[in-house]
Figure (spheres, rainbow, N blue to C red):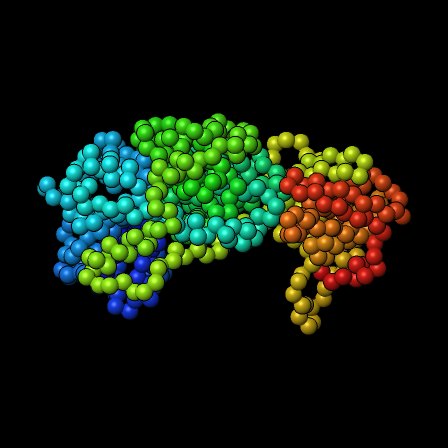
Length: 542
């Protein structure tokens, strides 16, 4: 009987990464209990209920004898539980100390205030990720350090096992050829979300949508403190501009694997990014929580500083030239071996022989929260002969735009009425019997008639074919060539091609031409063949 003692959602997630050590062993029965006293226990209880785990009330857990007890936080009266007790790290690196929480200047995971009952350690085994952590613990309590072992970090091993799936994660997120920037925030008064709550929204407003994707990774305590309802309300403008918010369990890690750069405060997520070799940009505004000389302190000292959202591109360029994996090596030993090492110690405490074979660190599942596709844009365009450069931003962007573009029918009425470019995507499903459908020719004519501001209306038929009606040039067909790179092909959003054609056409009046445009989206350039409308496209059903 293994009891998993959970105090918060973050601690639960850490422990779930450990449980594959028992995979396939019918002798092991796992029960969970919620340790009282945390301000963040509600989400932990909800997560347990969703998982289908069998739970024990805390009082019942105190009365029972357990063959093994696993915990990832030293707080909450764990010494009162009966059975061999194992303490695992709550995060990576033991980098922070929290005011009014245990001994000053010592992280709780290494603090004798929490690790000792009287003069005795309450944990029978303290599993740590690096010898440096044992040395720091030994300087505070030789007795506690004498019960510690270095096993590595199971969560890091899952990240490393997931690295080959990077392209799969990016496909699930709809990243395409864009650069994915992950903004990570820990919790507390010095966190990025507390000090710069609008940074993610600023980045979605400043970075061209077709060149960058922005994701926000929050500490589970932030999810618990704010709640899903208020997060959705507070971040609504950024969501409308394409922001991805990572779910707190597993999805955050898939996004980290998929990211091209990480913007971070002093949370330990950045150390995982560094271990993956991902460029790290420092957005921590300083304070008292980071411990001098800790792996996180050294990482932040070696990475470029982000002073404002507008400086991100320069900071990412500087970060790409710095190899931060050495700092991660100071926090994570025995990489790729954590489950095997940990299993040896846990089965010893259970008095059992492990099952045959070596436990594998499972890769993280696919992200299930793709970004919301924006329905309206402020478009900046530059035309030079047949080359058209297009950059699209949220409609509330302050800089001047060449035109506004909006999707019918999803965009709001105000955006539809003011847009110079309207587009509609063909329905990929078969229309039910009895329902009428617009043809591409019919809808583009209707859009022009009902929207006096509209100068270009487009029916997006496929990812490579668009019927375009221009108020002066008439009906045209645009065929998009895919971009090819390393055996992979990708297409830009066809609505971007519509804006490029609109900018190039200007006030041209002669539709009897064939031309090939080069459309530059910022992350990819594609060739667009423009010609008089193909007859088959006119009756394409929308």
